[in-house]
Amino acid sequence: MSGRSLGVEEELLLVDPRSGRPCGMAGAVLRADGEGSMEEELQREQVETGTRPVATSGELAGELRRWRAAAARAAEQEDIAVAALATSPLPVEPHIFPEERYERMAARFGMLAAEQLTCGCHVHVEVSSPDEGVGVIDRIGPWLPVLRALTANSPYWQGRDTGYASYRTEVWGRWPSAGPTELFGSAAAYDAVVQAMVDTGTVLDAGMVYFDARLNRELSTVEVRVADVMLDVEDVVLFAVLARALVTTAAGEWRDGVAPPAMRTEVLKLAHWQAAHTGIGDALVDPRSARPAPAAVVLDAFCEHLGTALAEAGDAELVRDGIARIRREGSGSQLQRETARRHDDDLRAVVAEAVARTRG
Image (tube, rainbow, N blue to C red; front, side):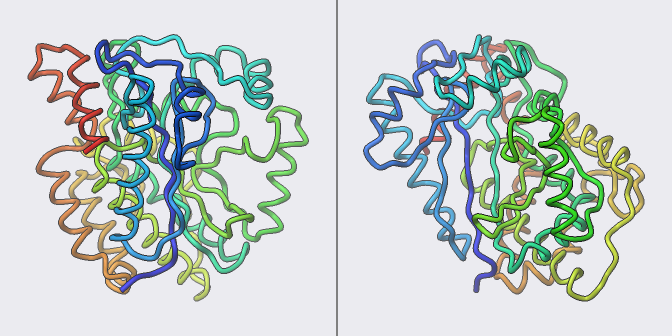
């Protein structure tokens, strides 16, 4: 079985496999990439890969492994490595990639852009029309913090433990256009908001409208943008099929005229902060009540909310087993901290473990 087509973009960190520190080698790695598997990103210490649209979780896993392996081979030709780390555990002074748009961003946003070395994972899920896509965006917001908590993989920043499961969330949230959104109601209203944001002269263009979930008209998708890049392909697949089920469920509610959930954006921002702070290790804000509840309770409610869509896509068993594995073994942030503990807080070991898992 399958469902709506989906694709994944992953941002990967370029690191020195000996020191563990990020390397500003994106240009050389991109030139060494014989398969066209990567693109540049804001900083020279990172690259981005992207899968083709696929229908099944098995196809997606194959695509992710293929492009991670291609990125690793290209990096190895330059005597460096790729690591699926959402922030660098070790200190780094990033360098803007020499491309006109990125240089304009650096000039416009100063230190905010200069420090913005973070690696995310974005899922594109097919929608039938812009209005369906906006109907989806209006209905998935309260559940997105749950996905953020599950995918948290950035506990370290500049050589220190931040106390967060996803510190990338806090760094990314500095962009003035980032975060959750109010209800739009229609594609026309969505477009009007985006145009009004561009018209302020604050962001360079519509590509800098960094909503947690946004409409991609070119690809006919809703793009879910809340996740850290994850250590393991299995976790990426889990995130992707959960995002697809969330879009499918919301699209059905939109068609049936079910009203969007009434949760204030101010409350949503706090729910995202809580998810980024503790991941699945403590309470989350329950989307049904906007009150704290144990993460296990919220995860069970999430799976129940998506039950029909997961079953129809053939993903119910994958999700059940994947969430059980993360509860048992820990999310990426928990695994990074455990690796550090095993190696007397040597963060080079955290990077080495991430390199092995990424290549894995």
